Image (cartoon, rainbow, N blue to C red; front, side, top):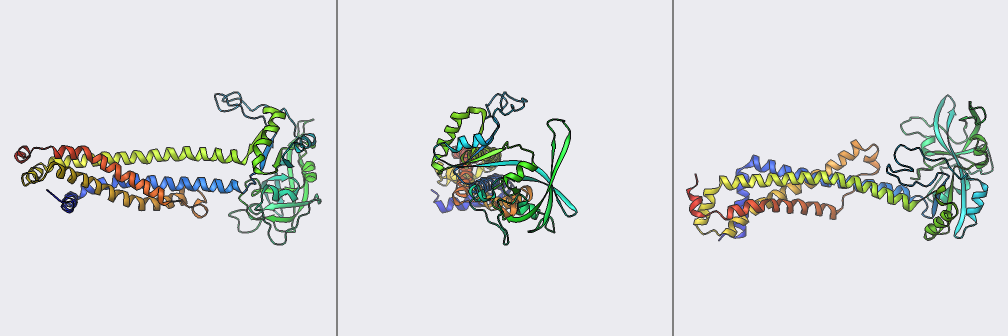
Length: 419
């Protein structure tokens, strides 16, 4: 009867005797393991990056818009696929603001106008989004917000504007587009509701503040002016584009949402940070599941390769098996011999695959995902890598069971007669 050391030595020698076939089989396992590790790391990075970004939003905020709440039809929208969204039934104005502000557990309501303007800075112009609101309340919707040195808040100055870092210093530009104290002309294009003609409204503003990057998508690409200036420039006539409703604490968000919904039903759009995060998690989860399924298919292909390799080995080593049985090897020894071969293939393939997957993940993140290589590298955890390693090795052992059973059941006389 063979001891465990002899079994491992014989199994390893068998693999080295068939180097090319063994290396190709190990590569199959390695590819599957590497894919699982790489896509898992990138998927975890996506989820973490999105979560961090939206955690910069205060958790006690509800976003209110005049758009009707989506009623899921066959096509995923109101009325189904191809149907345009219905016209708003509610106009967000001062009366709506006062009504929502009076609700229990609501501490504040921040009104905003939004639009897109052309910014003329010296001889250069760019198109940027504009957010009109009380500048003093920026910290309410973005608690981590910070300003560059020299910035000042002038909430009552209709000619003051605060710009995001990405607006003042556009990525990829060698020189700043806007600096503190600089004057710039903002131009808003619109269609006159009376004549139907295209018109423009322009006004000069002075940069009084620059916002450091916050991770808040609402602020990080915007120009902020006060409500008075926004109402005039954007021709809003007191009709707000959106509201930030501030609940007293995050525990009251659901209660406040129910209260608003009881007043306006589905004629008003309500979104919360919690809902955004849930949607993101579902989206990234679906992507990760799809990518993991591809990686698992690669592992299954590797398992098929192991079965093929060991079946071929059984045929080629029939006389060797007969000799081992003739000198006292038991069926269990032969079974263990081939299972250890499958185990070694799995160990080599999974271990190399983990290392290759980590490198592949970093490379894929840097080349395929723009900007992701430096800010959000793949995230690998010990638990995830251990799970992938065990899955790869376990699948390799399972793949070796049938060929190993076939080898163990060979009769010594038949095996020795084999040519």
